[in-house]
Length: 178
Image (cartoon, helix red, strand yellow):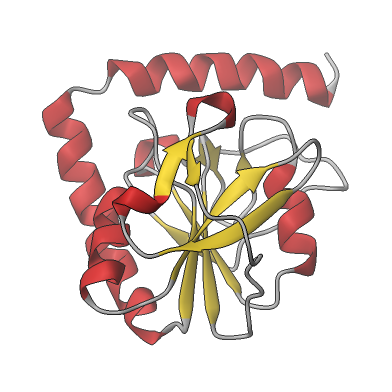
């Protein structure tokens, strides 16, 4: 089986397992991830983050924290092959976008991170070295190739496992689990 086929099969299994998490278990895991992520949020100049869906590690709590503490938040718009991040200043700055994911409504000025920026990277699973398995389109691998700040993959601890890797896969600097 090719690496691409292995990843496809693993994605299907991981999505099934994510959907089986109870609301209470997910909430508890999300709270733990947020508490471990908080020291990094406090130190960064701005947060580049996805807006979580129901099966992903919650980012809405960290976005709320950023709004409350005046920390700039940038969320992505997915193009044909790349992500472009734009600042949002509140929840009303989002609209339903591609793949059913909330995206910034105002796309006037693309965001440019700096060395103190933090990018929160989604993952269906990851390994302890910061390599992750996403949804298979390579958006974050391409984005991280030019991102000057730190990248943090957030993942539930029972989804930390060995992952088949390809040469284009990018490593996150931090792995944050529950």
